[in-house]
Amino acid sequence: MKLPIFTSFLLFVILLQFLLRRTEKKANRRESAYWQREKEAQHTPAKPIEDLPYVKLPESLLPECLPDNPEARECREALLNLSREKVINLQGMSNTDIRLTYGTRNYEILSEADTRYIIMIRNLAKLAEIYENSGLRSEAKKLLEFGLSIGSDVRRNYTLLGKIYLEEENTAAFVSLIKRAEGITSLSREPVLKELGAMKPSGPLPEEGTDGKKQAGEEERLEDISLKELDVLFEEDKQ
Image 1: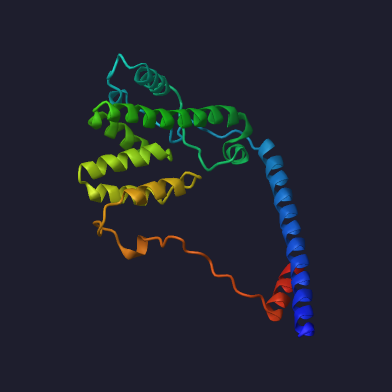
Image 2: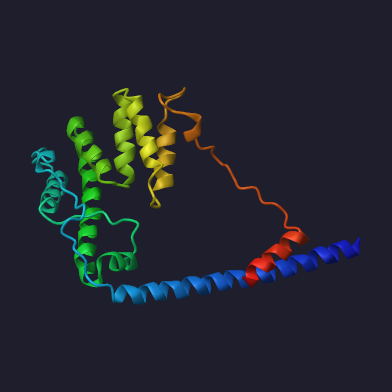
C-alpha cells in the first residue's frame, strides 16, 4: 500500500512544480507583452478623433422636474453640462489600448471624455431613481432606456428598469433587459443578473428559449491528470 501512495505523492509534487513553473513563465510573458505594448503606445501617432461615436444626450430628456428637490436639481444640472461636452464610452479599453488606438496625444482628451461618460451613466440612474420614487415613472423610464442605449452597466439602471417593466406587465421587455444584461462585460454583470433573476415572475417568460438559460451553480468538472496527460503538459511547456 505504501508504494502506490508514495508514487501518487511523487506525481503530485512533480505536477505542482510543473504548474508553478508554467505559471511563472506565463506571468513573465504577460509582463513582457505589457511593457512592449506600453512602449509602442508611447510612440503611436495621433489619429483623427472628430468622428468617434460620442454620446449625445438630448436636453429634451431633462425637463425641469422636482425643482425643489436638491438632489434632482444637482443631477439634472450635471447631465445638462455633460450634454454640451464630449462624452464617449471607452469601457473595456485600458489606458494602453486608448493610446495604441488613438495616439498618445489624444489620450488625455479621450480619457476625460470617458470619465464624463461614467459620471453621465451614474447620474442618469440616480436621477431616474429620484423620479421613480417621486411618481414620475415616465420620466424615469426614458432616462433608464437612454442609459441602456449608450451601454450603461450601472446596476440601478437595470434593476429599476426591470421593476418598471414588470409593474407595467411588459414581460417581453423584461426578457430583453435580461439578455442585454448578459452582454455586460464589467464586474457589475453578475450582480445585475442575480438581481434580475430574483425579480423574475414564476412561469415561462415570452421569447425565453432554453438556449439562453444559464444553469445556476454550474461548475466545471475537474478530471484527474494521468501520467500520459502529464507528459503532454511537459511537451507543451517545451514549445
